[in-house]
Length: 125
View 1: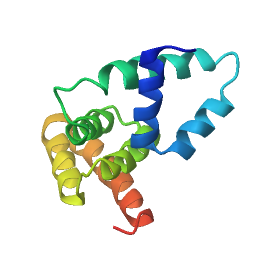
View 2 (view 1 turned 180 degrees about the vertical axis):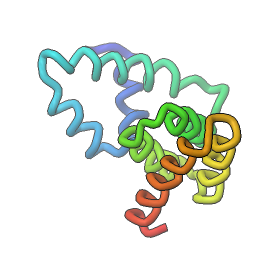
View 3 (view 1 turned 45 degrees about the vertical axis):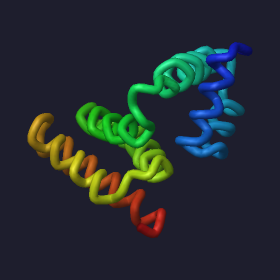
View 4 (view 1 turned 90 degrees about the vertical axis):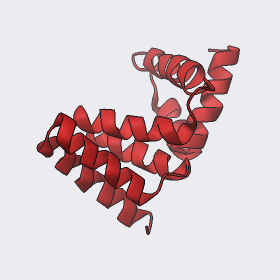
């Protein structure tokens, strides 16, 4: 897929999630999963993440809250790492997870906190 949005999205996706992860996801895509990878890259990363109204740090904190509420630990781990790359502190990440506890439920927040702690430990933070 070649479009300006895709190219911009690919650049942002690599910056936030890490080039190694993104390149592996794209390389592992097959005929079944490639359309999803293209959709994510072009629209999620190329259309939404490139909008100027919210800085990446804010987007990362929002994602941590939403993904925690949805109880998606694999994606949460990925986005906690992205949040760190985008300049979020462990205190800001913890604060978002505390907000999740109040508005989305303690079990979702506890699982989110558990995943975030694992990433912070792996990153030496």
